[in-house]
Image 1 (cartoon, rainbow, N blue to C red):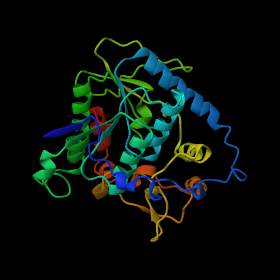
Image 2 (cartoon, rainbow, N blue to C red):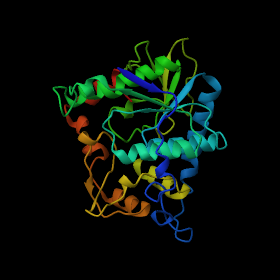
Image 3 (cartoon, rainbow, N blue to C red):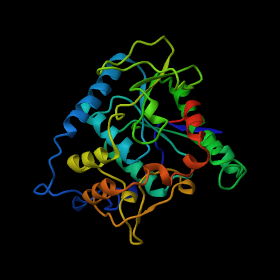
Image 4 (tube, rainbow, N blue to C red):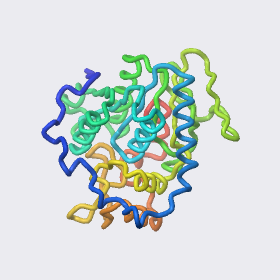
Length: 306
């Protein structure tokens, strides 16, 4: 059974305005100490151009939002590109295994920013305890059942021609093969061996009728750029990214059973930036499904995953 909500029916209104959801000012650089972030202007301008170009060229677009740092930056850029209003639905695939703070964060800012939030969720296999870690499904099979399939249901239900996603080339090897405008076939499958060329900031936007697109305005950003932009713009950020009382924080967010925190004392955005500049550890090393087999993530993405 797949549940698709066009609006969140049970908002967490009792959490509205709580400091645990609103990011306090001390998390960011003070105006007096803020570094020179002018190098971000070019990144921002290109991303906003891609957002506007896609909106101009294609109908029935949606934007994925996982409440993670990248998709939150993408959502912020969309609000900038369209002057505070996001003119397309925001999509979240709820696996039923999200960390609770992620859902609270989602509902609070969906209300605050007046987002047209649509949520897809598959529940049948979870209720039968077939999924990881309760059942026999591997992590990758679980991602297919709880992420890929509900996303396809959202696309089909609302007839989306294209989906914005906040992926970056430096995030992992498979995503480095992506294009800004990346076509999928009728089954939402991605042929990573046959992608349109994109040279000299020229993007292919003329595709055969019926082509489903994934649009990636953040491809040229790095993990450090994301955090620098969060600091410059003071973008609301879920508190899971900051060090807790046990000296741990999340570097990458996903389902609770498959995502582990890292040891860190970084309690502010500038401290995270400094930590990242010194680390040699891969960003998604804490995402267990990525480590299941050498080609698992590539195969999963080729079949229609984010």
